[in-house]
Length: 310
Image (cartoon, rainbow, N blue to C red):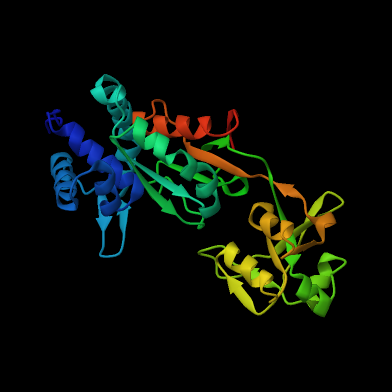
């Protein structure tokens, strides 16, 4: 059998294959490449016809690699990445970043680190579009097709580059003066079991978050109960201001209420700092100019820090 000879369209077909194989989702891959789903499907089918084997198992609900597809993906992805990087380096876009950067960002992190730089970034790079998903769900940013994320240090995948953006954070239990006058002040975290606590649940999780405290250098959890559970911390803080119960939130959310006397901190001796917000992204030999521009702009807007593997 004659070997498969390269043609002018091979790179586009291979790039399409790598995009789908990396996300296992034709729609996300098409969006990332800036082509229609039908055009992407045609390129993948063309490659399958060329090599003479099926590369994907397709159903109405899922896409997976065949054994042949998995082997091809492992072999060609590094080469396709390097070719794409070489083309980027020689394009005019190197000097004038352009295109779409997809970001996943926790809500509070956006107000702290993204909103303050948006105007300056847009003015400096008018051809770059930031597609920002504000969501506190912990997702796999690579599998979901994101280029970069801002999230808490404790939930960063180990294979990502992480750049510290700010100081460590601390969560504190708080209640209104009215609530404490009615129900008393807890002296130890275990006393929370006898109080009305305002619960919080990580988006995407089925069970409420267990409040975390530290004693003798070790973290321990308290599974609190109360009249309300929410996926938004600021909702719970407002409920505490209204006297509904005790809330547990980061100091950045409650410091204004404490200063104005609307909330009173409790159990502070058991509240310890934990890693704050990080900018994180996959390690790359050559980063897309638009992504590099965004990362550099965010870092300039925060205190200097070194990139580390989380």
